[in-house]
Image (cartoon, rainbow, N blue to C red; front, side, top):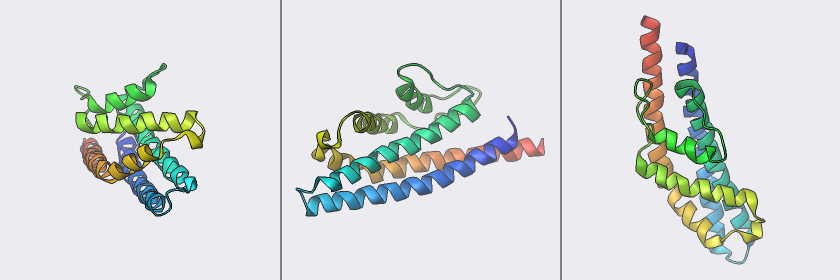
Length: 165
């Protein structure tokens, strides 16, 4: 693994987190409209779509970490859940745990909801569940973002050390 790969991954993490923060804001605005117009399911659809994007973007980062750093990407029927769990596990000589167990448990709720969004009609999505998930999204994002930023900083440190030889 070259030191450039770690530096690029660190930059990707930071850039993606900026985009995810925008998604969180859009979801919150949609839920605000849900509360103002309870009968308008289009706002629920918008919030659900942003919930889907929230988890999908984080999962893309987890995949990059698994590819670049762990050099091991889960496969099989449960790969989404296994990938999330992999982020909780320290990889002995490779890296520390990236997310703590509490974050993984919370993110699992968003993973399960994303599965629902992908597999049912939008009118079958539970509006109360959408509101509940969006209400918890910002605090979860801040925690996950902090842990991912710390990891990005570690990647840059490893990259600098590798350059110095």
